[in-house]
Image (cartoon, rainbow, N blue to C red; front, side, top):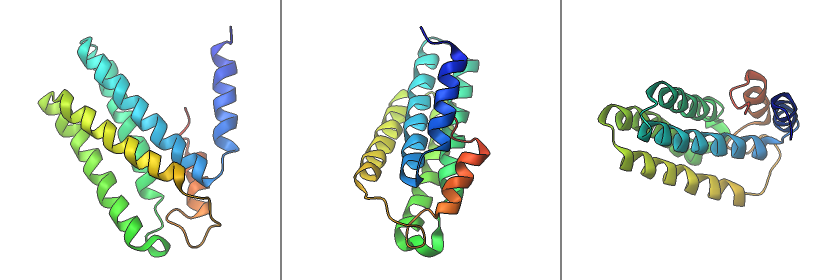
Length: 146
């Protein structure tokens, strides 16, 4: 059985060696996982853990949001910005209203976006939605560390 530090070290290495697309997918995977865990915590009445999961999901989406290259990404980047802002806001609304269906809907929305990103071919920085420097900044900030 692997110890926690071995898993943490592996995950840290995975993030630090990931390319731009992989970092984006890691953010999506972790945001989705955090929303699912938060929903489960809510059902078990573990409210403090639920709050931490929702905050983590919002932080991951904020990393994606601030890393958008709005100039090079054009309309796609602008649309993603609106989507990320919407999902971040709706996580708060779902929590305040105790709306488990909305949480499921948001998880589904992020899953669809993640699937779309998984199908995108990696391109060199400069003409993409996320610039390479921004993707590396995401990793350096630790906002996507798992």
